[in-house]
Image (cartoon, rainbow, N blue to C red):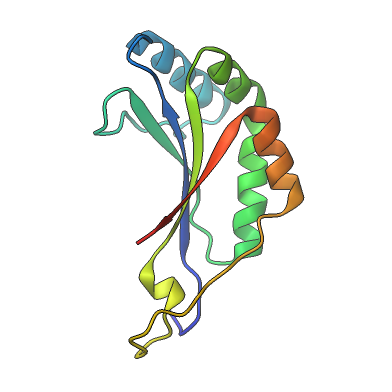
Amino acid sequence: MTAGQLIMYSVIRFTGSPRESDSVLSGIAESINARRPGTFTGMDKVDQRFSCTVSKRDSVDEHMVQILHFLRLFNDILKDASKKGVELQLDIAIEPEDREPEGKETETPYSFLLNKEVMAEMSRSDVKLALTIY
């Protein structure tokens, strides 16, 4: 990694409530893998939750393209999950090295633009946004 290079990692989380049975999440996971095999890889350590990788791209622009593609590809499944009471959350993780140039001890502010197409797709699919800063 070079100084100032961004490395982000994004997942979409599917969290069921205690009243949902495991069969609801299992059905969603099966639908996801029927559409794109290997997207669902197993349940999280957290009860009633699984996460699917959306993007590992280094470029913010490429990252946003992959997020938009994921949201559009799975739009009907996401909407159905939301109707069944499953909380949907897109989590964009940013590591400390993404914010701090090499050799610099102070934190450098970092910002990126979440484009309107991504926000519109998130809204249509009832997906919340989380930013995780490590």
